[in-house]
Amino acid sequence: MTSEGWGTPPVEPISQHYIVCGGNALAHRLILELVEHYEVPVVVLVADRTRDHAPRIEQLDGVAAVVEYTSITDEALRAVSIGTARGLALVEGSDQENIHAALSAQNHNPDIRIVFRMFNQRLGENIERLLKNGAALSGSATAAPAFAAAALGRPNSVEIDGRYLHIAFDDAITSDRVCVVADQIDRQDLSKIRLLPEQQAGSAEFVRLASEFGDDGPVRPGGVRREPEPAAAPGEEEPGGTAALQVLRIEPREPIDWRRRLRWRLLDTMRFFTSARMRLVLLTALAAVLMAFGVLWYLNRNFGWTVYISLLDLAGAAQPDQLADIAAGTGTGGIWQRVAQVVITICGITFAPVATAIAVEVLGSGRRGQPRNPGAGTRDHVIVVGLGNVGTRVATQLHDLGVPVVCMERDPQARGVAAVRALGIPVVMGEGPFDEQLRRARLKHSRALVAVSGDDATNLEAALEARHGNPEVRVVVRLFDDDFAGHFYKTLDNAASRSVSYLAAPAFAAALMGREVRGTLSVFRHVLLIAELTAGDGSGLMGLNRHDLEDPGGVRVIAVRFARGAQLQWGLPDRTRQLAPGDRIVVAATRSGLARLNTVALEEGAEAAAVTAAVTGAAGEVVGEHAVEVEAAVEAAVEE
Image 1 (cartoon, rainbow, N blue to C red):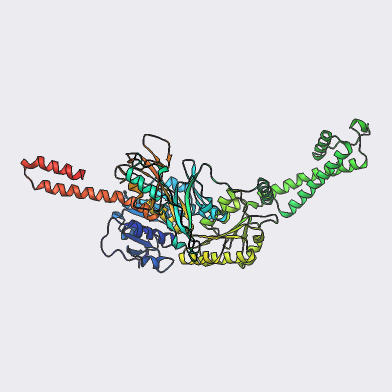
Image 2: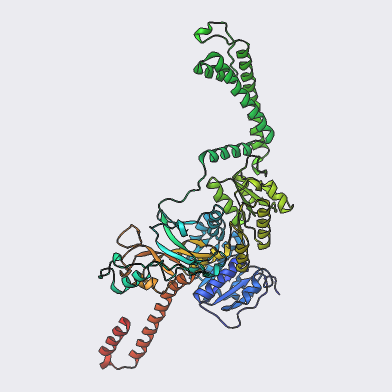
């Protein structure tokens, strides 16, 4: 073992492969995507082949080799044949380590495709400019919207040119749906779900006729009669639910009453800038001022004059009582007016030192960095357990929506603690049992709990404790294991589970293949990808139409932007129009469907190379008098 690390390089020389650096859950899912859906050779570089997901990765079919090095050094990159690789994925380590590894890989292989994980997305965009062929992605940013939406009990959305795509279920499906994305949905057995089914909710007959006759044929949409679906016989199960993709002009907002939102904002701002004793002093002084104002108004019956005299008293410029004509509205109200003026003046004098104390407390003592527990007025909030990358993103998104958030974290050095403190979000810290921590987080008054720590058992424990303390609370749990998630759905109602790696890995795999994935939509534990593709030389999309793209399954074309027009056309009805150079399409695809689109270019490129090689070989065997026949054969072969 050297100081650099140790490892077992591939037994045989390998080329045109993909390298995945990491042994975490995201690396595991990404490798599965590459070997199962894209069917490409993968070499894995791990820090320790006995830890984390490395033992399971080593057992996967399609993995050419697993190489072990403690860090990604030049020696490690040479051991995984970086010079002949087609792509490199860096999905573990800090932002700084991934940046260093990406730049080192580009020095070894300038043409390699590099996809690296970055928590700091702004920094990642700047690093992309330094790479010839690279993309920076954030697994937590990809997955966080699904967790936040699940906590609020609504579908997450993906923005495309000012429109928002989301998935609606059953009764929420409206008549303007784009396409059916899933059917046979059984919440007790999620393995029955069919993504992008062939039978599009009874419209399969029309689709078949449209494919046969074309859009200009004799069959019109009104000419197809849809037979009603037969009811389930006694003892048989009703057909499963349906999910459809729909387009909204505005992003769905969380229905929070503006008065409740304003009240929470005011209380949260006061809790951020003041301590409990400071708030007590301020509220007491404010109540005294309001009562004194009411007394003055009652005695003088002149609102404008009452406001005038109260502001002067509050500013310390007290107007002494003058014995004048009461009927004129300028006289005294007697002893009660004098008492009211004295109260207002004293309270006004109190506000100045209190304001000074608040400024000293916030700026001098660094209150911004102090953790604080949720106040007694916290209601209808979401509890986020775990402030890693995902938890921080989820808490931030909920806070931006105006939803009250309370965070729980046992590690005071966790990455997201400082970030949520800067937003003024309460954080419950400590190593105590979950029931005590949840009580401090005011579980009884919460609306949902999102458990997104890195350990499945910890997340499940938090969810079960939350359900025990508040049977009505909605729980969203981060789980890697699919079987574990299946039992979770069967056991708990008003619950959802998501897998960060399952949501993020398809986007990483597509980016590694050069595809632009705009976002992911979750159908329970399943994932749909929203991707935007461009038809061009070498893309494999040239000359294809909607039939060619959709018939094999796993892909739905939901919008097209033609090269000669700038506007995106949703639900293009012409299913026979072929794609021209520069045309862009937006598709909703399963992982295998998007992988199939990616392999189209590879297959066409291989066929073209084979034809060229065959024709070139044939041309070398003929003499000059047959040159004309050879050229004709070349043209015929290329056209074929």
